[in-house]
Image (tube, rainbow, N blue to C red; front, side, top):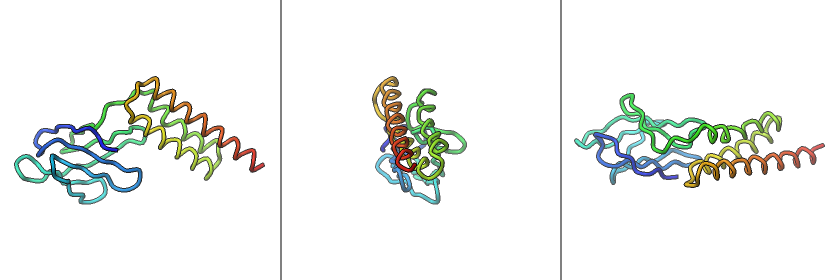
Length: 150
């Protein structure tokens, strides 16, 4: 997933963050790739030719990462409504309902799908409906697995 370009004062150009489900994110400032120094830490090219230390952070229920430069957080995407944050988190309850590994795998997969839906361009009601459908489908799968294991 690539974010829309954002402008941060003092940097050499617009910032785009490309995140992956697995692996490190890549940050591009203008036409230059940022250098990853360690986990979630990057050196971003500044307008004056120097490098600026930045930290990339993301919340569990927020689909868009933030870039922290000198204590100032810059969001890379729009804020999502609380309702969607709750719907992203609901599949986590499948871990409790599923009782362990199977519930964890199913709940984790449903959360990843819901995060992808939250990043989409649909309206909030459409996103909520899609997330509820994902939750219902995964509850159905969990119920079928439970019935087969008994």
